[in-house]
Image (cartoon, rainbow over all chains, first blue to last red; front, top):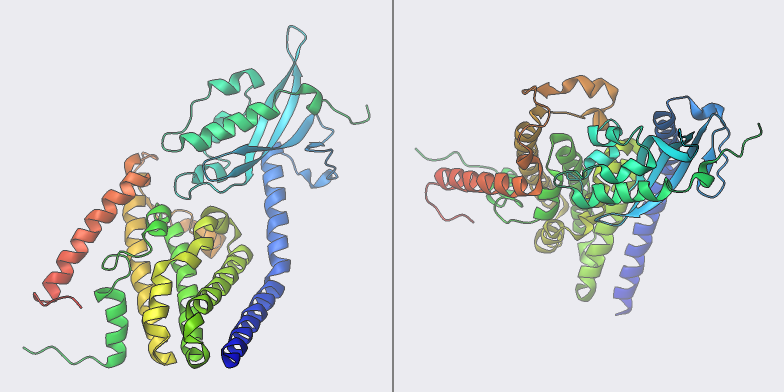
Length: 175
Length: 222
């Protein structure tokens, strides 16, 4: 019994050691990948080299001070939460009311089924491209994707949520 | 004419890869097989990840098999498999981050893949390291063969392409490896969707079993 416990402790120690070593070897590279991925998404969303702007999140909003605001949102998909990052712009309509227009949308994290919901990780996918330039009042008219209805409707719901608060996106940058 | 005699090593490998193919003969690990096989790059990513875990855990368990207490062997096996799965997740995040974002869910659940626990319990925990290595290599090869066949057929029918997105695994220079067979980008959508996975897998299973029966000359499959 004691010998068995000793063996278990030894095996656990070896496993912990292997994990620790792999973690040590990969941490820096993973952090670099995550940062590069974040900036790639921001650059794709805004269409500019956003490195020039200081990252300054105010809650879930980052005002880029060029008319655009990046907003983080979360929605419930088929496999769990879907985290969204959207580039939004406030526009004043002919009737004088403020409306949010989507300039770009990207999924930063999700647990949707691979093979079925791959398109949400591909910003160039035609369905995600259709969301660009939409006003907050037209998001509800977009049709879901065949075969990934729950996932695509979840994204539309999430986008609808974050585009209904013009005050959130209104620039807080010095004039 | 008599068949040439095969060495025991070759026999272990071919038996694990073909006669006892984890996917087509034992029908193990079908959940990731069906879910991730919508194109070749996803299939290859999961094949490599599963192979790493299988080889790592089989070899480690074969080495320490004499000190694993029999009453706690399953927790030990799961602990070792989970360790290698976590290492695979970290290595994928480190070296193929974009591919990881696509298939992360099914890489994380390799730990529950009954194909791996099955080989560890029935073979690696009772055999020396070289035999356990060959068995793991054969099983991983057989699983990869099944995944890649399914991935290639589904990508071809579903998207009209082959080897699309290989840059996710092999870097920017692999971007030109894509073969396009159809101008219609969408292809037959059914093949890329889950029902298509079941249909193609069923057809491949039938085809594979017919071939196996033919080559075994009517002998019972072991």
